[in-house]
Every structure is written in structure tokens, then in C-alpha cells.
Length: 227
Image (cartoon, rainbow, N blue to C red; front, side, top):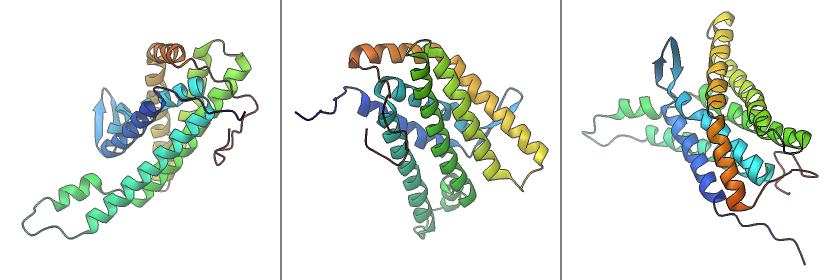
């Protein structure tokens, strides 16, 4: 008999939550906030959580589930950008005074849009690939090595790409490097502090779903949707 795809209780809900968090992060990213001595994008409050989701998808359900979530997040974000652009371009109704405010909140600069999409896609796949390979290397032991190790790799790819593609040629190189290092340190620190929560969620999901994926003999091609 042909093999059947396992049906999981929480995978769809987790994937939906992942996409929602990603979209909200993009909406609040344009506000620059002050946290202690750092000036950071509002997205720093939520966006690192998407990498925790990536760890959960890969550890419990496998790289294929993570790949599906990443692509859904990518196309959801692209749709947000596209619809926002169209709605901003439509003429406001007579007497509606908030066109400029709406455009400020939902207007995405094309360069930032492209940088965000490229960085998200590359960073998330780097995170999940590293997570899956480290699990094979450690034979499933020492979960912390792969949750932190994948974060170190994935956030490095994401942070370097998004800041370089957005600000190269706009700010001095010294400032660019400082922005990369600060953003990277904050994101990695965020996820290291969240390690106990990640452990708890992964443990409970493994028990509930009766799943503990090892991606042996599986395709890691981000463009292939076969197992």
C-alpha cells in the first residue's frame, strides 16, 4: 500500500500563527523604537519568533513542513506588499482625511520590500537546513546545540542581507557594520533567552503529535516539495 502522509493536530495552526506573526512584524517594522541604548525596528519584538517557529517545524515535523511554512510566509508577505501598494494608489474618498497617514503606515519602499523578502527567504531556509543537519549530526541529542546553532546561522544570513540590501550606499560602511552587529546580537540574544520556552513547546508537541522528524534521505532543495 502507498505510504500516507501523517496528519498532525497542531501543524496547520502553528503554520497559520507563523504567517500571522510574520505579517504583523512587517506592519510594525517601520517604527523605530528605543530599547535601552538601542534604536531598533518595531519588528524586533516579534520577527525573531519566526525563527523559533522554524526550529519547531524542523525538529518536530521535518524540513518539508518548515519549507511549506516558509513559502506560505513568503507569498503572504508579498501579497501584503502588493495589496498595500494597490490600495494606496487608489484615490481616497472625498472627505477622507487619512490618505497620507495610511500611506505612511502601509507604504513599503520597493528597496526595503525586496530586501525583506530576500532576507526572510534566505535566513529561514538557512535556519531550517542547519537545524536539520545538526539533528542528524547529534543523532537527536543536545537540542540546545541546534536551536542556538541554527539561530546563529539563520540570523546571520537574514541580518546581513536585509541591512546590506536596504542601506548599502545610503549610510557609511562603518554605520552599516554597526547596524548589522547590533541587530544580529539582539536577535540571537532574544532567541537564546527563549530557549527554555522552545524546549517546552518542542517536548510537548513531540509527545502530543508522536512525531520526531529526522531528515535522512530527504530533499533539502527549497524549490522541491517532494519528501
